[in-house]
Image (cartoon, rainbow, N blue to C red; front, side):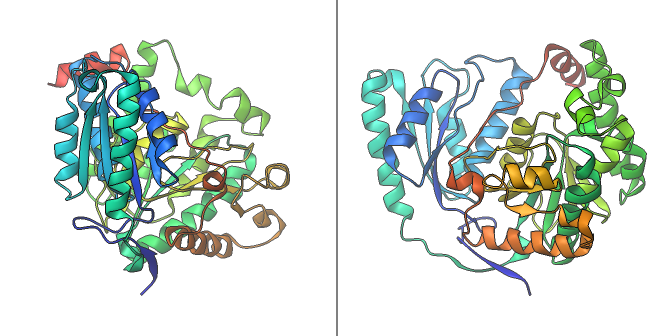
Amino acid sequence: METFKGYERPVGPAGVRNFVAVLPISVGASPVADEIASRAGENVRATPHQMGADPPKQAREQIERTLSGIGQNPNVGAALVVELGTESIAADDIADEIAAMERTVETLSIRDVGGTTAALETGTDCARELWDEITDQRRIECDVSELRFGVECGGSDATSGIAANPAVGAACDLLVEDGGTATFSETPEFIGAEHILADRCVNEDIREKLLDRVDRREANAHLMGVDFRGAQPSPGNQEGGLTTIEEKSLGAISKGGTTPVRGIVDYAEQLPVGGGLVLMDTPGYDVESVVGKVAGGAQVIAFTTGRGSTTGNPIAPVIKVTGNPKTADRLANNMDVDASTVIEGESIGSVGKRIYETVRSVASGERTAAEVRRLEEFAINELQPNELADLEGEA
């Protein structure tokens, strides 16, 4: 049995970090949440974001699902939900969802406590008290089947599809073989290879759902005047040597490995534990896509990049993998795994094993390059008007 050393939770799988999360309800509460986390200590993390106080119903539901999911992530031992006090989303509702996972959670209204100065003082004290409640937790041996492993790619180039992505895919295969869950997303990057993914679905319902999500993303893009098939690969991808959307998508889907597709969930929807390979329907924007998977419960993320990326996440460690030897050299202090050895002759399987070992080491507490440098980005996917109209038509 493969294991990692994680934090046992009363409900759900083990965490790989033990954070107090400070979750703002809106952009208006975000600066206060960020400052509270900064004042409260090393193990307190904020998730400042850009969403407004009174979004449309469908957008509101997605924001609620995302914030609740972040608070329920196994890496969160306790949470403080911060509201300005004028939002249509109630901090108490988010707190109730988090408390359902038997986590200690408190709420703070900036308006009710008397404004920013009082909110910073009260919130900092509260976050420190929450940390005091979970600080005694210790890592224990956990089965890797408890891991939900999210994979992402960004700044792709020609080496991504031949080295970094398939090597991460090999790591996904190993985790699935050991009973865990692997997930990748970025639905626009399925286009051109969706038929291959569809053929890997374990039943017709999942196949139809997958193809529906691809069609929906492409149709919504058309309504905004964007032709994915004409606009991809992006100029940056082309500079990196990618020539067609099919080439980019075939490389992108290889980061999920080779096992059957056992499900597809919507943005920030909970991923199953012990679920095998499960896709998530997300946009192609890296930060929003990663946040969707973390809200879905992913404890560890692997991010492949050919041209370079420094991104991280406040709640889940992000392992950076590159297959480009120049990026491995120039961004050495941002990379965790050098997969460019594939080009020199190391097998995909061998690099995949190295990545899988890194996943288990990081899950056991080893800090990633992004964590060491506190590189943490957070953004919630914002539904566009045409997407809202499409979803309201389904209601």
